[in-house]
Amino acid sequence: MSGKILRRLVVTDAVAGGRGFLEGTTKVVGTPDAPVSRRVHLIMQISARAELAFPGRIARSAWSDPVTGAWRFDYINAAAKFAVLAYDHTGVNDPAAKVGLIPTPMPDVI
Image (tube, rainbow, N blue to C red; front, top):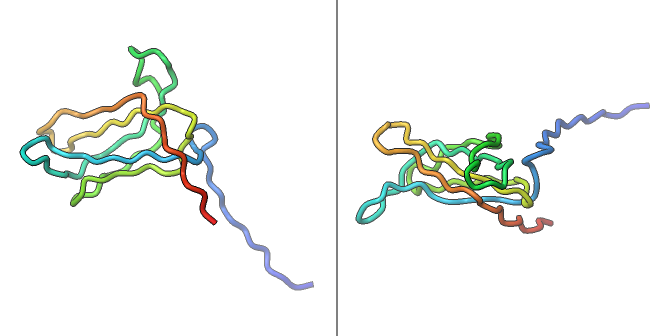
């Protein structure tokens, strides 16, 4: 009997993973706003209380595009709420945050 055994490594995130996505841009406010590259952290919110917006876990991290400032997190839990925190690695600007974000369902791909 001959044949090949194919093995595939499938990595899943049972808590933060899913069929949703979040996207946005990082910009320095001005006239006009200037797109910049920043480290963006996606935090899964584990508390519904507004004063506890950040207690949670970092689900993903990425750099935004240096030309457009665009960032996107795919395959995240569409039923969860997330916070996004963008850090200025140059130290010139304070971090920027958005909380209570609900992912958009990803379109079905055939």
